[in-house]
Length: 81
Image 1 (cartoon, rainbow, N blue to C red):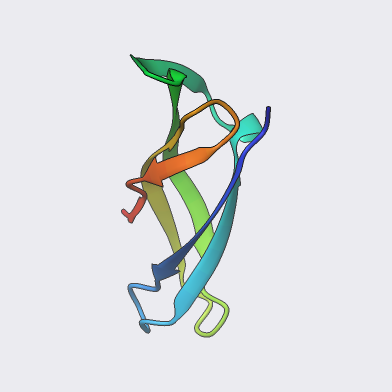
Image 2: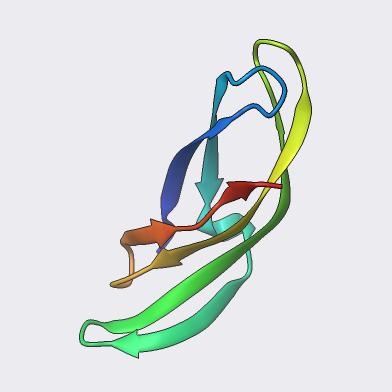
């Protein structure tokens, strides 16, 4: 089952908030661990490109987001590189 994550990131150039959407189908799925409700999956994001809608500055974000229980977004640690 595909999950979607929407996160906001502050442009490092002008501090404008830039929204980004992440789909689990576009990232590698790794088994992270097991909990009471089944498998917890981790999706690793490596240098995902973004562009500020105000100043056009290009930057990247990296980190992970997790699916737990299956089909549900749990949390993320995505940050501007």
